[in-house]
Length: 230
Image (cartoon, rainbow, N blue to C red; front, side, top):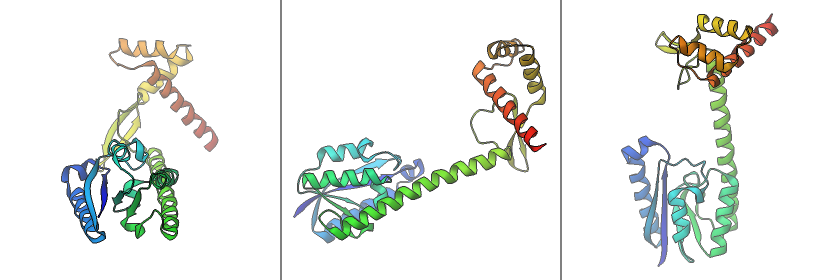
């Protein structure tokens, strides 16, 4: 009976806390090993780690790579549990083949290593997973840009020169005209960002010169946009 090592990954704190996803993955891997006649030696559980991290850079992934031996089978349920990057997936598979280690992925159809069709499907699915991840990042950037244009609050500290308000159950960030006018006037008088920060510190407003510089950049961008629109 060949020895097998399982791999489970959950990427969110909620999944780690609730444990349901971990339990389901563990039970399915145990069932696969019984079905395939594999002796399950250990299951590595990657908790709260993003799939964007290279497999070897993950805490449990690196342990698995250090412990797995020739003749063993690495078992996971889905390709995206192990990889989200095409080059990482192909490099890891190549490393397994060199060491005589087999890879079993349920969603790819079973054994990947040593099967030309399995390796082809693995390669194609790796490319699709990598593409989907890139598109997800692009969509997130697009959504954030759209919300920012609407003045929606995006989380974190409110930028200097702006104030956070709530309207119709939603939070927005609006310009504080009094502060921006003061910054504009001081800049026109030749004040540096450090002097402007010091000026506001004397008035009880704690702000760094970096925040003042960012405020001036936003004002310049806004002014340029208004000029183009006009």
